[in-house]
Image 1 (cartoon, rainbow, N blue to C red):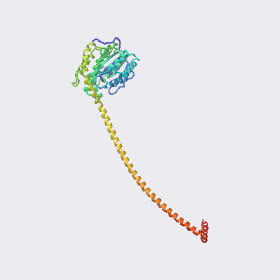
Image 2: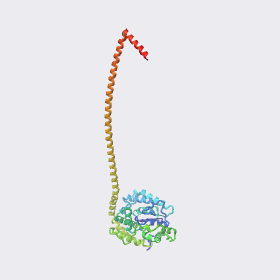
Image 3: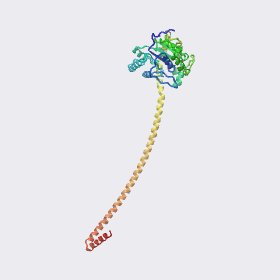
Image 4: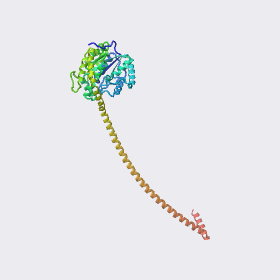
Length: 399
């Protein structure tokens, strides 16, 4: 097969376009072997699902998430987004960020490769940014048997098989349709694991690059250390078809199998079947859009259920606190009543005691007045005065 879009010179930018769990990480790492820089800000590896690394540029992932959100979707939405307006003025800031990001990534070496499974659905946005920069790009379309992808998504994300089948289909169809008339090659993940040197040579041929030598240290490290059977979490024979899949999935898979077996770039003979696949999928776009809206609501149910459970637990705790507070207030009210009763009794006792003191004082004052009158009467007579002087001398003598 002759490559109808083989570049005269290697593209400055290589984009890995493929479905989640379809080997995009391994293919991105293969591009590094061919001399493409993968950038300085890569997503960390995940020991459970991708121990060797995702090779996704964090800034590109953030932009793709923002673009999907702008379209009312996310990475697991089956909505096709084929009619999305990526020239919308609301995306002006994102477009400027994309141009600046691409320019920054290309500056160190002049050759950059990126991979994000979200990209196939928003490729028109990135292609617009590349046109603005006057840059050319090439594509490695990553494919893997849909049954293997579906099994991997079920294990990692718990996604329904039918939903995953539509996701596989939309990503593959977008990657093929949006890369028309551009340098592109289809690489099957299982074929890459089986014969890395062959697939490296196919990518190199599609991009106008020399095939690396089999004993090149970068090739040896990629083949013997990076790739291994451990990377193949699920392998499925090519003739496996699930009756629950939409018929388009089997047709798309058959097409990708043929394209992945080509010696190099996708040639003009594939244009018609790719266009036919895209037209058939576009006819499903309204239904996929509706399904995407339903999915978004359904995906929110666990979160809302969790928030409801939290709210109920918080309410129960608040009610318990209120009951404790009311009991405490009732106890304080009882203490206050007792204190008031005690204070009233004490006040009454004090008043009685004060009254008795006042009566005793009045009595003493009466007796003092009588004594004074008696002394006055004694002082009025000679005998009385003599008696008083004698009493005074006696008192002084006693002291």
